[in-house]
Length: 168
Ligand code: FES
Ligand code: FES
Image (cartoon, rainbow, N blue to C red; front, side):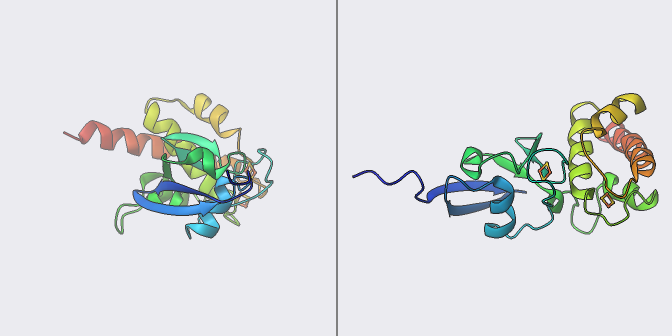
């Protein structure tokens, strides 16, 4: 006899390079499973209906709102969260720029902005300020720190580009 559609299913999520095998009910969202089953609580849950972008993670390097995706849809896929940005003790240039430009107040929206901006610049390192503002407009900051967020992302864009140009 086949199981009920609500029965937990075994899935495999690779999160920041670590494989997590978990059993999840099909109704559960990716963000809940990332946080509650995989212990990666850096990704935040805001509106839970796809508006604020706080829950943005990268799935196969594409920024997605993890409150809008079922965890079972991410089975076998590679996920990057804010915990994976730094290398050892070294912060990612985007994280450093957010610190330098004071681009966060409460910090609730920050993981989503970081992942969104990193994904955009990994794909197109030459994005200009106007293009970056357009991309960032998809996420909300309730502390209204947009001015400094844009400054930080533009500075990080320059840093990331310089690193890219310097790499062999
Ligand atoms: S919590 Fe996912 S978009 Fe707001
Ligand atoms: S820093 Fe508080 S919501 Fe953005």
